[in-house]
Length: 267
Ligand SMILES: [Zn+2]
Ligand SMILES: [Zn+2]
Image 1 (cartoon, rainbow, N blue to C red):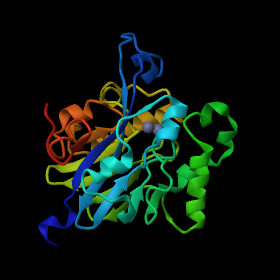
Image 2 (image 1 turned 90 degrees about the horizontal axis):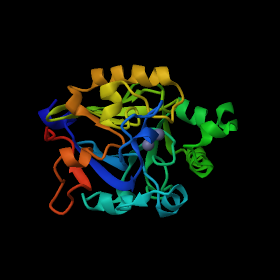
Image 3 (image 1 turned 135 degrees about the vertical axis):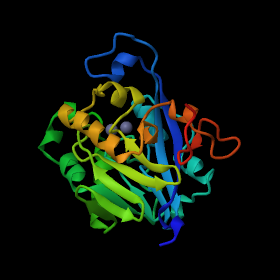
């Protein structure tokens, strides 16, 4: 095997923003009560086996409905690093929350990689409860079911390698079938944690985001992603605005919008 067969470039593409106070980000609140916004991302993995897009974000209509602000529509963010959504063949969906699986028609030629447990959960008895439905949109779930019937969903159960150097790992916790993505890069194994840790502060302090299926599995998930990543600096949280401060822009003009994750972060 040649050296480069399993090494990838990895990008975080920021597309939206939400200002909020820190107590909203932690189960049992936060005594500091400071401004602690969330950033919204999709991620891109480029390598010898093609381009993999991780999650599909939400669109302007959903931003309005949910009171979020789009900073750059995902199609524009992807194009800025040479990714044509029409040409993408593989989309990994970490979970079915509204901020990870919208823009249903953006990838007309892709297959979608999803954990069995996640679609089972999103169509299960738990969705009879308003509290459990909060992070889901029925149109997103229906759109994914339609993709199942169109033969465009690849199901995974647990840990699976989808290309040399790219593995999916079921974490659960935050959503019952949440998966993260581990990618081999020239700086080592990077873990795109998605919502397995929203902010650096969650995994670092053992705290939990309030939207949660199972608190115990969130905490166990922190141990799993620490094992999967080569160091704490190799874990990329799903919603931390610090990600675009720590990593360099993918190209001039993309500062704080599209950053490279396969190079070491500024400490
Ligand atoms: Zn989520
Ligand atoms: Zn999320």
